Image: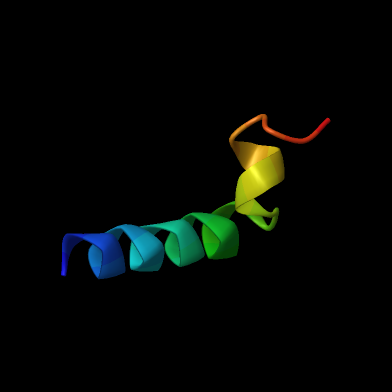
Length: 29
């Protein structure tokens, strides 16, 4: 359940930032 909440948070972050999570997290240049 926690993982699902985290996944939803990632989608929310992507929607708000307009960027992908990998790029937002700095994992991708």
